[in-house]
Length: 277
Image (cartoon, rainbow, N blue to C red; front, top):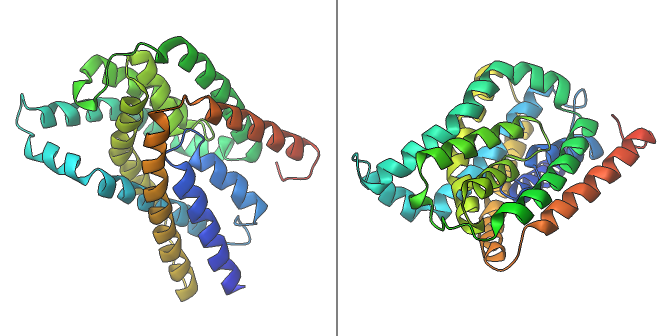
């Protein structure tokens, strides 16, 4: 039984590392995969599952910090008003605010009503069609190619779109990238702004979850937690770099099609009782 927990920790860590920064919804995939492998309550305490998801998300965030450390460090050395680092982090803060406020107000309701495979599948499908529409309409001709050139108005639009990600399955990455397209950012700049915005967004969300979670863990549960964190970090390191290289050559339509297909499969499985709803 304890060895099975380790296997499940590795599986969920891989899912988080792959999907956190792709526009396919890491939360949605963790809910779906968790249901398939029975990494759910009451098999394991709900508080432990919540803690596990928080910790492996922090593993994925650490990957962004490592990959973009030079730019992050340089920006922090240029935080004086009027310098590019100050502008960048002010924009990140502005983009962070809308979802932070709404998420704080609706966090409990969202967890109660929307964390199930059917609502996730619906979000995957809806978000997939939105991605196709917005990419076709806005991506070509967008002139903002560097995140240092984003202005306050663009940042606020992106932040408003991030609120869509409060619906599990919509994807924080997809929501912010769509907002970036509408705001005039090209693919690479949209993805990189999404990565930077993930740092305060996910740290704040993780902090809120940790504050609300109280749990005692046995040794094997702690080991599984550490393994999940490390796996998520290592997989995210590989995925983010490859994702950026992909965006320099290809459109994102492939991710939208994947979302629609996987969402449709989940709905079929759920309504035929082959998967818990």
